[in-house]
Length: 371
Image (cartoon, rainbow, N blue to C red; front, side):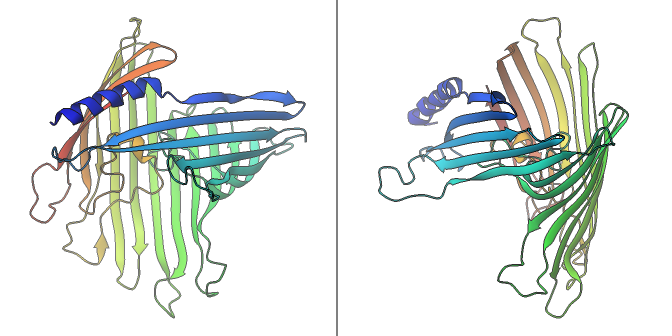
């Protein structure tokens, strides 16, 4: 490794200690009766060497994400939330005399608590959606922008059972497009059982756009059914398991039947009697792939709307699932010396699930450090 890379790698570690996210107050500050504000300012600097070429310099880039939220609760059984966001790449339009368009609305929704139905609620607008470990649907908090959905949700929060039913719009084609274009929606039912330890869900990713001119068939009708289970014992053992199966049809002009699966599990142990709370864990993340021999069936699992950065290593080498699928075997350890400090080390071993061209050997590994 070149001396410059060693120096920059050390500088990156130092920056990781210094550039800790700065929160104005994530929980909110009450400024008036029925009005609470919250905010966040986060700066992140990265040194990127993912070309794996020791003869080239690392690429440096910096991001700044600023959020300001307003929560109104003056109306009985009603919550209105507005969250403004400015996301920018530092150095872009810096020192110039022109405006930029980085400022936008990250969340804007109204949530009603249904009278006469304790625990029942209805939410409409733009909002973050996070379920389970976010292996299927997540907000991608690491992103400089983050993911939100436009739509509506109806839910119930109970002791033994909780659930969300939702209709989310993925693509709107009602402006300046032919009437037959159709929109892309995500329909779902997400249930939580046994004090939230067991989750069972079903999703329908449905694109109403015709698969080819004159067709009444949609270009995508993919369903995903799955479950998520997690448990932590008093002795320090923990386990998490995600399972999902996808079926349906994709691009019906080619009659591509979908048959794919995902398995992601992790088991760990925390030394709870130690002040630093060391944790050691291992797991596997498997997504099915397609070998390309049968054009009538698609076996590549689609990661849908998951929080990619939380899985498959912090280098984000495989955020999108390869056509041939992916096997990720990983181990990790972490320390939590205080409530505000956490140190982690991960190692990932990758290979495709199916043969990819002439590649049958492992496709790489990823070592991640986090503070």
